[in-house]
Length: 94
Image (cartoon, rainbow, N blue to C red; front, side, top):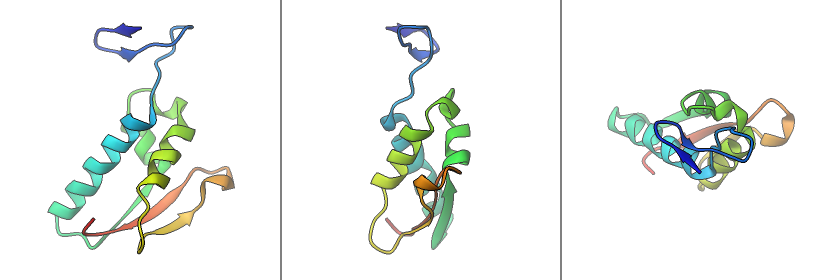
C-alpha cells in the first residue's frame, strides 16, 4: 500500500524503505562529490540512513546498498558485521 506523501507502507503501518531508496541516495551523494572534484568520499551507513525518511529503521537495507556500490579501489573502512553500521571510502570518479 502507498500513502500519499509517505511512500510504501507495510502491514502494520510502518513505512518500508528498500535497498533501492538507499542506492538512489548513495548514487546522488557520489555524483555530488564527483561534481565538487572529490577524489574520494567517505560515507557511513548512519549518515546515509539519516538522509532517507524512516531510513534508520532499515539499516540492513542501507548497508546492502552501500556494499553493492563497492568497486575495485574502494575501501570498506568499517564492515557491516561490526554492529556499528558500515563505513566505505568510495573512489572517484565512478
